[in-house]
Structures are given as structure tokens and as C-alpha cells.
Image (cartoon, rainbow, N blue to C red):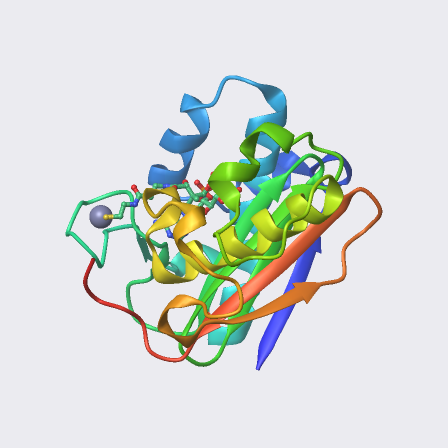
Length: 198
Ligand SMILES: CC(C)(COP(=O)(O)OP(=O)(O)OC[C@H]1O[C@@H](n2cnc3c(N)ncnc32)[C@H](O)[C@@H]1OP(=O)(O)O)[C@@H](O)C(=O)NCCC(=O)NCCS
Ligand SMILES: [Zn+2]
């Protein structure tokens, strides 16, 4: 089962959200300069903490996360997940939206992007030679689907999107378009068994 939560950074109580963050999250927050980035970050992690706390029946501040990389062992660039185990989750932020997706099985990747982005010049980097040609908003939609896949595997943008054929995604990823507000596209990818090597 996959569940989806949305938040809009412009309409949350950011002071209340910041009180839920861990020391490590405050360090990350304080590295961000722009108010928009800061708002997206605190909204996102407060949403993660509130949601997973309710699922695990603990206090939001009691949860511990790791970002160590399951693929190469790097301490900080991996897929965020709960240290003590629990549902897989993925979060994404763009514009005034934060998306959180939680799956009770396997691993999950989520992505939201503003649909109006001009990605024309990125087409060659997004599309696989066997993907259907597309442009404009449809190309953004392809990007969102593929970013969801590389977030589920933990590779992130270290795996070029053009190496992924949407009709035959790696590790049997299942890709779902998620309904989003006007101006945004969102997708999730679910993989039953996480890949543990590069
Ligand atoms: C994952 C990645 C594509 C996200 O891109 P983005 O433009 O920041 O976009 P989003 O807003 O959609 O996602 C950000 C969230 O993805 C999550 N994330 C970070 N690294 C991730 C990874 N490796 N896999 C899955 N999710 C990841 C985080 O929760 C992050 O939000 P936070 O920093 O506020 O906690 C990008 O950060 C990336 O490519 N990271 C490098 C991964 C890497 O070095 N891989 C090497 C593997 S050996
Ligand atoms: Zn790595």
C-alpha cells in the first residue's frame, strides 16, 4: 500500500515545524540560504516526522534517520530511511509543494516538479532512445517518473535518466503518476526488493 501526503510550505506554521527537527536536520536547515529552500526543508522533515511518528506510534522527535548510502557506503548521500526500520518513504520538494510517499513494502521513490519548467534543452538527457518522443509538459512528466525511479533505487542523479527505458524500468520498478495541483506533476516508483549494489 502506498500513501501520499502533501504540504504547502507557504501555508504551514514554520516555527512549529522547526521545533520537531533534530540537531542534524537543524544543521542542514542552517546551511540553506534562501527562505524558499528553508521553508521547503522544514516543512518536509516536519511532515516526515509527524507522519512516520503516527504510523510507528512514537513521538515525532523520537525517530532516528540515516542517510548512509546503501549502494557505496557514503555517509550522507543515500536514500533517507528510519534507523530502526519501518515503512519506506520518499520526499520531494518543488515550488510551494512538498510530497511525502510512504510504502509498507519494498522501497519507494517520489518526485514532484513544476510542470511549466522549460526542459527542452534537457530532452537528450531525459529520454532513452526507445522512449516515445515528447516535449513541453509531457517531457517534465517523463522526468518526474524517472526521478522517482532513481530515488527508489537510491542512485539519484548519479544514474543518467536516459539510461532508463520507461517501458522496461530497472529492478521491475512500478511507476505511478500521482494527481497533483495545477502547475505540478508528481510520480512515485515502487521496487519490491531494493538493489544493494551499484
Ligand atoms: C536524490 C536527488 C535526485 C534529489 O534531487 P532534488 O533535486 O534534491 O529533488 P527532490 O526535492 O525531489 O528530493 C530531495 C530529497 O530526496 C531525498 N534523497 C536524497 N538523496 C537521496 C537518494 N540517494 N536516494 C533517494 N532519495 C534521496 C532527500 O529526502 C531529499 O530531501 P532533503 O535533502 O530535504 O532531505 C539528488 O539529491 C541526487 O541525485 N543526490 C545524489 C545521490 C548520489 O550521490 N548518489 C550516488 C549513489 S552511489
Ligand atoms: Zn553512494
